[in-house]
Image 1 (cartoon, helix red, strand yellow):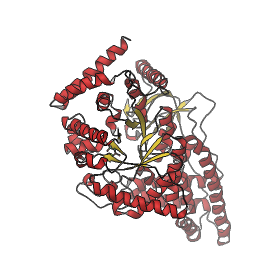
Image 2 (cartoon, protein in one colour; image 1 turned 180 degrees about the vertical axis):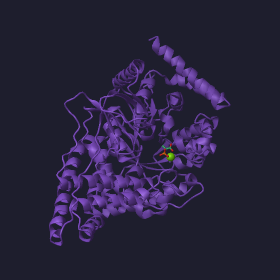
Image 3 (tube, protein in one colour; image 1 turned 60 degrees about the horizontal axis):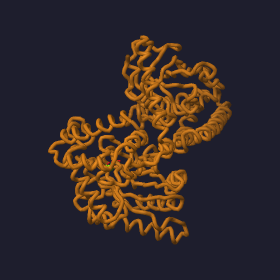
Image 4 (cartoon, protein in one colour; image 1 turned 90 degrees about the horizontal axis):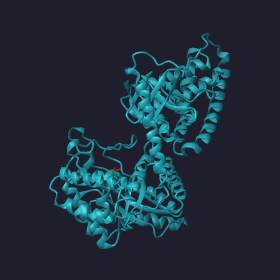
Length: 580
Ligand code: PEP
Ligand code: MG
């Protein structure tokens, strides 16, 4: 067994197909001055062909993974259009009397080495983009055939040194059971695309292999933990086959309840919504029977590019999501960068405590130009569905009022421009800072809804950095302090008659369900893969029983005691369900 990095979850079992490396035979002879114009024209022609090929790939891909993933190819076109790239190629032809293909190869190598040397993951990814699009151009100049994957054999597990987005774009999930790449990272574009396609992927096995994998070997991969088996013994094949079919069965069983109403046996309805960060994740959410989107983390729209997205670009994405939801709610959270989420093109200050620093709503209120652009895009999208707006990291009434003042300006501007928006759009805030909990009654008078962000609320309440592995044992969502925080928040919301949901990771934790039921929260929003499991539980957990266990939780003094109560409750429900 070898241990790689799991980059796209799922188990795959099958024979390997090793993708040959791209090898180029380049002409060695020098050219004459008289040939310069012809060689330039060959490069231009190659660029034109490459660009139309990329456009075609984009069109084909858009239907499979959504328009957002195809932005990768916009970056490829931008490289081909970049005068710096062309100047480098022309310079090599003119100064060194080299043929077009040799000049292109040298230009690619030059830029790839330059970006690779930088100690920056984003720039390293750009090196991959240049290599990918450069290879496409080279292929056209050399008239080299495309390396194609077999489509007439049994489905296989693809093994490649690294896989470019262009190569992945051609992959048919019907033929490719899973992928192993020697290099690569979980944040690469290829990994993002593999997840969107639902193909299990393990990356980074290069240093772990004692000898290269050959085509035709039996391979098992587990994309959730990065395990790879090469020619495993029958016992391993059997146990992974069993796991694979269990996963498939459980998935099927759960999908059977996707259309059920999310109601407890004693009639409490608890809406289950999805957390998403891109359009592509929406399809998975809808297939899981999500009641709309309870948290759209818009910061991911700002990443994966080299400048702030324009109003029009944001509007297109928000509108597409709103329309696809067909009237179901869509909670769009304004930009929440800073902390662990950085933008390569936006220099955030070096801070000793970035989680307590310049981030989220604080940036928005400081950079009102950026904030208003986003608000205008959200407002315009509100005309096309049931859009709600949510501000992150609120800690005072002043912040809500200041944010609403910018919102009102944006509304005025749209009215002047004659652009429609939903005048009744609901405004909410994340409750993720202890100060917000303490003044929840005051905040509730300013907004239409609360959404409790337990990820941050746990870290701030317990003073435990959520990213610090050293103290991860202290990150206790079931700490009695948290329980009190949750109760205060929900009670304040109920007293003011506003709705309250939960959108942190705790919302998808089955053990926490009786807490939400007894507090009577209105909505849980979670990652799509948790929705059906939570719904299955909800269908057999009554609100009355939940209230009984909640009483006991309040008598607990430690998180261990609280967890004992919750685990005991889970077991009782399991037994009851098993006995019919
Ligand atoms: C949270 O803090 O619970 C939350 C949902 O926001 P994020 O995880 O994006 O910080
Ligand atoms: Mg948060």
